[in-house]
Image 1 (cartoon, rainbow, N blue to C red):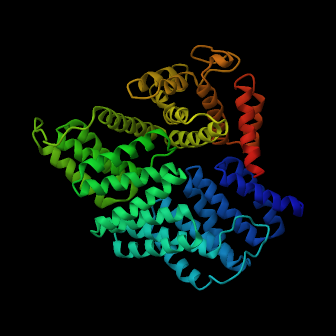
Image 2: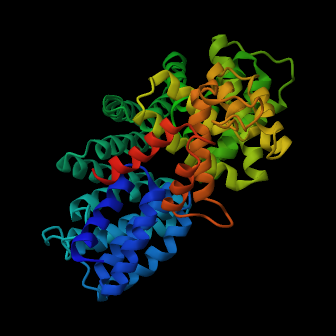
Image 3: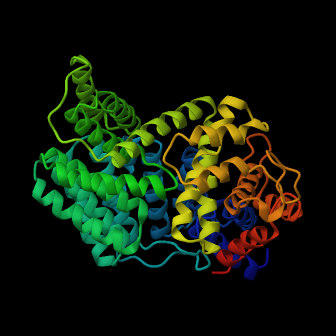
Length: 505
């Protein structure tokens, strides 16, 4: 690899990763790693390991990134890697350990790195100038502070967690990092609530919500609403709790590619508690069962026990017991019922074939990127997200055959979903040339969302095949070869432009 193309390949890999296109990024990162090994360039190998670990995290495989990055980070002192690059590796390791629910490992790395990094703030730039997007020491320290908060919170050492969050907030403000500052406000709000300071918790969470709403960070905005709902419910303020809970539910339901277990647990606990007070025993039981399970999966064992205790209290009550709180609006009850039922279906599917859950999450992410690049209206994005999350439901009952999409669409008809979601699920196995199923539709007779889903599902299936995964270039070559036969040529062209634009950014 020539010197010029070497630096260019690094830059393009980083740009693709930043654009949320990890499959293309991973292929370039493999080329970067081979070039770095050929040159015996230790700092470059460490950078590749950091970026590759991030790519695996984006593909819902954080554990795969841990081993390579751990080995590369351990070898870093002998390679001449700069303090900034080495600290970036430690920050990524802490984040990945949190993702695989190993908070003790994350905490150990964060505490040691924070102590070491504070002594190196004044040290200079990365050793290799051709390595793009290496965070400064101050940036890595700020994120390490938030990782320390998360690990301390899991261990329920709330005084230590509050201190870590406050230090991270100050650092993020100095860096003028809006997303980081919002995350730090949210962390301080959680700590204040746990330490019995609800007014301070509300102030911090409201500050986070204001920033995330302004920047249209949908997932973070849903998290803020969920935390504010839990806080209001704990104070006995039912009306604001329902307002924030409904807002969080709407955001999670409509746009977020992956549902965060802790956020969903908060909402299920909130709605379960309220529904128990209104006398809707069956739905309350569904919500609290889901809350207890998801808190446990998120590592919040005290919250899981509390939800289980509330559930046990309801189960011990006579079935005819009726609460005296005002009932929820019927449309909100319908959405809550749909959420809990659908979560159950998705959990059943994941237990049957864990690969499908990861596959659907990656498909959702890519489909959203493509639809946004095609400038689809906001309301259609919601219908698309539902279709991408749920289009494999029929497979658990009918297998991967002609009945699969039809059965999936019929199962989903019981939920309050857009009609466009149902038609996308029913027709995503149609082909542009009319050779698909269930109806053999041709060209633009196939609904547009179904055409888009067909392409993205095909691409991700090739790239994430458990037996023989193809690199991005191989998957794209097959997608292009099927343009005009299996896939809509205009959508194939848009998918290609999406990658080309990101790589040249």
